[in-house]
Structure formats: C-alpha cells, structure tokens
Length: 320
Image (cartoon, rainbow, N blue to C red; front, top):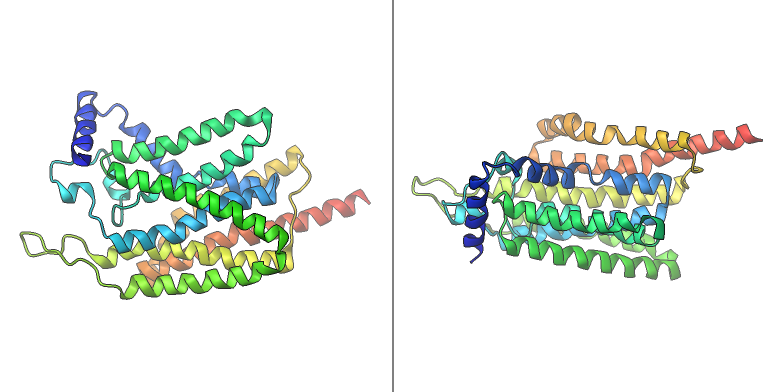
C-alpha cells in the first residue's frame, strides 16, 4: 500500500513534468538548513525560554531519531522497490535508513515549538498556522520526492508531538526544581555517549546485491547518527556554560539589536557549508560530524549569547 502511494505520487510528478519538485526540494532543504535560525533568533532577541523550548524539543528528536533509525534499519523505498525513482536531487540528501523521516523530526519540533510560542500572542497567531502547515508540508515533501514512505513520516510526526509534550513537562518541572537541571544535563550527556556506543557496536543488516556488494553500508548509515547525537552533546555543554557563567538575557527590543541578531545568524549556514567539510575531512565522517555538531550548537547557545551580553553591558554603561 505504501509503495503504491509513492508510485501514484511519482506518476503525478511525471504527468506535470516535475513542476512541483523544486518547491518540495526547497521545503525539505529549508527544514534542515534554515528553519533552526527562527528559534535561535527568538532565543537571542525575544524570549530566551521560548527559544529554548523549541530547541530542546528539537534536541529530544535528534537523540531519539538516530537510535530508532539505526535500530529499525528500514531500507529506503527505492531499495525495497526498484520502480521508485526519487525526484530531482533528493536522493543525495536522503542519507541513512528510512524510518522515521529525519527531515520531519528536524523541522517538526523547530516549527512546532515556535508555533506554540507564537500562539500565545493573539496578534501573530497566523504565524502558528503557517508553522503547523509547514510541518505537514515537510512530511508530505518526503513522500512526494519518493524518499520516504507514509509510515516514515507518520512516525516522525508522532515523535514531534512527543518531543513537544515531554519538553513542556520538563520545563514545568525545572521551574519548580531549578537545581535539578545540572543533573538532567549530566544524565543527558551520559545517555549521548551510551547512544554513540550503541550505534557503533550493534549489529546491522549485511544484505548483498546480485553483484555481491553491500546494499547498504552500515558505516555510512552511522554518519548522521554521530552528527545528530553530537548536536545534543553540544547543547548540553553549551547550556551548562551559558547557565553558569554567561547568563545572558535578550537585548532591548530595538532595530539595532534586531539587526545585530540577524547578523549573528549569518555564520550558521556558512559554518555548515565551509567548516563542516574541513572537520569531516580531518577526523572522518563519524567523529568529524560529531565534533562539528558540538561546535555548531555551542555557537548559538553560548558563544553569540556571550557577545550579546558584552554588548548589553556597553549599552548600560553608555546610558549611565
């Protein structure tokens, strides 16, 4: 049934000469590359807690998704059925196993967390609607492009809802017990290392093609797992440092400070494009992706907030 649905979408794509394929590719790319800039900006410039809510929900998914993917080891649709021909260049970004959809578990909590935050303000509730629609469109785009089955996307949506719910409960708990956060961060860091150990040592399918070659190389499948878990490790380290020694608060809401935060976002995609390949080339795909993810999270959770705090102190001195 799932393959038939993908074949129907494939036939529809062909009938309209792939007119919508660039749109769907853009949606998928935006979900994994640029969507994170929205909660990061919110964290820096609007509400520290609100931005953290979306980001922590995202990290929850980043920890669970690779563990589920590398446990289930579900092959991609075109491996299961050679009639499936992914659209455009989508096959190049469809790394790892298929279940659940990693693009959806990336975009889902980021957009979902911001949808919950924006819904609190009646003037911008329209943004909540757009964000929820974007989550659904991201999931559909993975089916449309032929790189995920409906059950891959449905599981990712359920994981998104779970992450938003658990994170909300966690924040409520920490409001009453702020002294417990250090222990939760330490526990999460240990779980991350256990996760790395698990995905490294567990057995993987070693199915061979008719030519006698591995259909899927487990070593390549682990790459995203190391990178995703590295994001969580980077957050844990950066959050501890920010909470203990930086303790920044968003600057006063002025056009100058908005512009400053927008400028601070520019290095993020540049780091992915230029620094990530260098580190991966130096340390290899596994540890290189993990280290880059740690650096990437550290930049927006702790480093740029330190810059904002220093600028805020200068503003206060200038006012005096």
